[in-house]
Image (tube, rainbow over all chains, first blue to last red; front, top):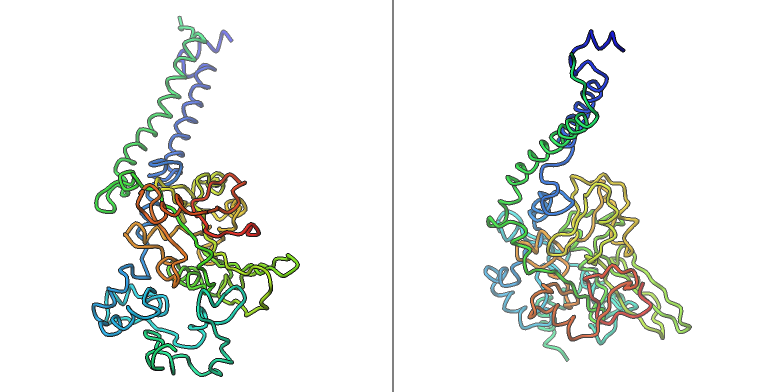
Length: 166
Length: 258
């Protein structure tokens, strides 16, 4: 003990000094590691990465949000026909599919509609759980025998071709 | 003569060094946070400013729902959930009670493939389901990495850069509203179309619902449709006994609905 004290005169070489050194290194390394591992905006608004909110909010939209009047700006006739008919309160995209890209650049991309009995049947097929009080239902095979619905019913004015609803 | 270091001095010095070691990086962190890009978004407003005075709510009218599942399809197309995989942000369940009080529940392909099924004497109805954006979300509590969180306007979001796909949240949700995204391999769930609503649009499912069975709005706005419904109509939430305090309210919800 005595010899060591004479040889190492500085604090760093003492037992306490060495422990202090190790402690300092550990703490500094911890500090750096913490800063590296935790994302920059973590904890900004709560226990999560604050930037994530903007990332989620800025995702692209596929269904346009302007309502049917947006479509009506170009498709005036069909918009007029639809607005007073049975399907008038529905959004065009319910049947026609997502159209945000079409609204942004009409000439580049058009929504593709599956104009088959299956599309109409999604709402009008007679299935358990669906009542005639809610919606007009049909058994597809018995109603048309497989003929496409649009042959008789114009979806924008379902009864127009048939001389009105009887 | 070497100066003896007393225990008191050592502890004092060591304490200062430890404190400095911890505080220095934290200080750096605080500076970085202030310059975050999140502050610049959406018309230069900060998120706390955008969130002020907002608490989003959802109303599902089960009496209007006809089980057409247009919402299910629109949701998948809007949010990049594969159409051919059995995972759903929103889905429609059908409840068919037979005369003897037995209840059959089905939701084939999330409601996209309902078969005619036999009509019975009992109750028959559809119940659309989606994330309830709970006031006390169990999914947020269990996330070990802070990858899912509740925003200031009450919507639960997933940070898909931070999510490690451990599936704890999927287990924790009492409503089965979460799933592992088959392509991204991170937890995914309904956000009430946060990316649309923050741009002033309605959620995709609300937009396409042909019968107006889905309604979305601000619960803190006394004149909004959802506030009026919650205030004046007979409503119920799913599994109220779980204490999650859902913010999706159901009109005409039968007691057999789980």
